[in-house]
Amino acid sequence: MNIKYSFILFFIASLIFITGCDNSAPAGVSGTVRFEGQPLAGATVTFIPVDDSRSSVGTTNTNGKYELRFSASMKGAVVGEHQVEIRTAPTEIDRESKEKIIEHLPEKYNNKTELKVTLKSGNQTIDFDLQP
Image 1: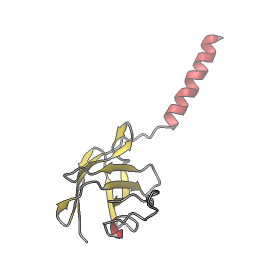
Image 2: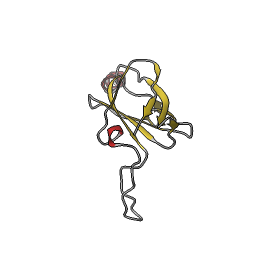
Image 3: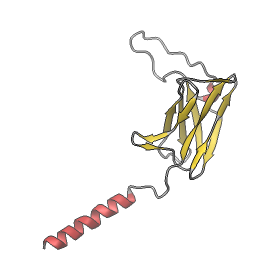
Image 4: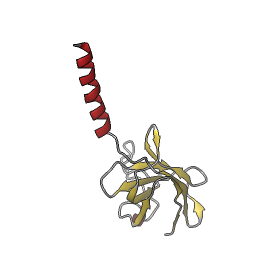
């Protein structure tokens, strides 16, 4: 009896694991963001898949370099077409001062993004040279 139940539990757990995992490995994505030719520090770079898969996010360092993370423990982004949003300010209102935090980049890079990329398997470098 124990072997029979162990096999059934193993089979169910295997099905859950297989159906819960995407067959494609995430693409490794890093790059540099520049605004008016200068590295953009502290910007949030978000890749949003057009197929409603999970987004990936990275933050630029002082040299404008970013690396996307799919989750806290996994680097990369799903393969396929993405819209890209780049922001220098949070999307929320500062709760203490009740003032709206001002975004310094034009809306064409965030709220009304015009940025699109298509990711392929493997590691790739995607740089953004933003202009006003």
